[in-house]
Image (cartoon, rainbow, N blue to C red; front, top):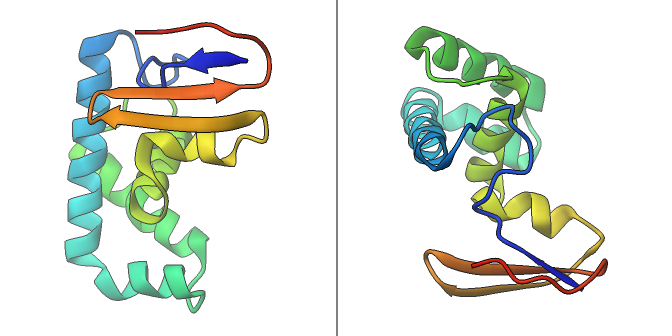
Length: 123
């Protein structure tokens, strides 16, 4: 089994180092706050199924472009916004991954993800 640090980027679409991680997280938080304040009924409607995800994606894309907040792929960035709005933020991809057996959260900055592929430890 392998332990994976979810705060270390696996793809470089939105990341280019630790300082970019905090910039992406900050940008996602800013977009989430803006979308929730501008479109609260739409966000609630997507969550309960009365509005389509595509409609909210267009509104999110408008906010992202207007504020020039994304780095790299806008689709990856929008998925991070959705993970924050409706999922578990940076942990969400690991929760959805069928190879992940355990997620251990020791503190806000110490998280371990155990995969079935081997046994590695990341600080």
